[in-house]
Amino acid sequence: MSQLVAPAGNSEKLKIAFAYGADAVYLAGRRFGLRSGADNFSKSQLREAFSYARQLGKKTYLALNAVLPDLELAELPGFLSELSERPDGVICSDLAVVETVRDWSPQLPIHLSTQASVLNSATAAFYRDMGVSRVVLGRETSLEQAAQIKEKTGLEVEVFIQGAMCMSFSGHCTISNYMAGRDSNQGGCVHSCRFNYQLEQGETLRSSHFMSAKDLRGIELVGRAQALGIDALKIEGRMKSGLYLATTVRAYRSVLDQPQTWPFWAEELEKIPHRDYGTGSLDRPADIEQTWDADDHLASPWQMAGQVLEQVDGRLVFLAKNRLKLGEELELLGFDGRTWKVALEKMVGLGGEPQLVAQPGQVVWLDAPTNLGPWVVARMLGA
Image 1: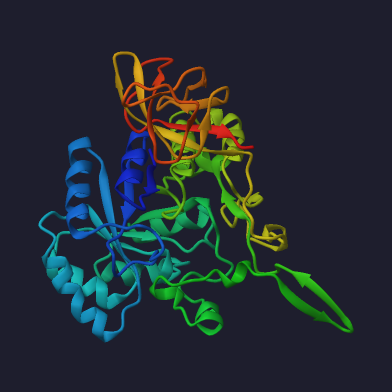
Image 2 (image 1 turned 90 degrees about the vertical axis):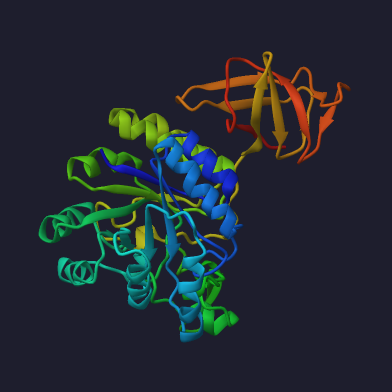
């Protein structure tokens, strides 16, 4: 069965991802990765994350996928040497980083980042000879091409299956550098491809988001990916919410286990903020139909209500993530795919005082509809 690899932007999201069925997570420290806007992990948090995952029989992959100038490259060995616990693999795109990791831990699996834009078996074989054991293929690769690369090289292959898409070849875009002075290949992308541009067509000016891509949703292709032997399916989104993470991981876990259920779970994926969906290049080359010509405002009627911290004597200790008030209805997303609807008829503060409203960050007692564990996420319809 294909491995389900989920994003973990912080420790809380790592636990949510594992609770909902991810086999592995990818995460990063405060440096050397490509999502500087995520919370990311301190060195002590990385050690705790690696240990926590091993206790669950899960895997962690440390992203070291930035392209590093000499000064930062010289500091990488020191960063690695301070990690008393090791991840189950590292994700690299810079060959100098690959070499540094091999010197640090010769037996540690190295995954080549999609930033390297590997699209063919010859390039994959080159990186294999450099010590890479898995290739996260460029997003321009189809599932059939991925299977061929695996067969010809003997490498494990991983593809993105859900999330935001880049209009450029990954690792080759410098628009952000020129427009904002921020290097997308060192974690500073400002997503210039999502901007609205004025296009001059003869004497006519037209506004267009002509570089903005639809979001990827490949849930209907999961069965095909498994039949082709794709080793890992990856969800994008280290900077996205706990609701996004719970929804996507729950959906893909369910379809990996029961591929025929994908139509139901495709509908569930409509309940998170997203651009229009497409399948990217997974089943055919991306074309103009994969362009999303609209303002980059990801609206959804659903929002994260909060999450369960623990259950005590038939009541939930619940952390509000949005403003809650009596009379509203929550949907609690079970780890097994079931969803429980709960009307907020009573909220009680930790001190025992009744609450008409719970503010974001407030912890309250709620009646439990069933036996639920920590990290269960709840959603609600917004105003």
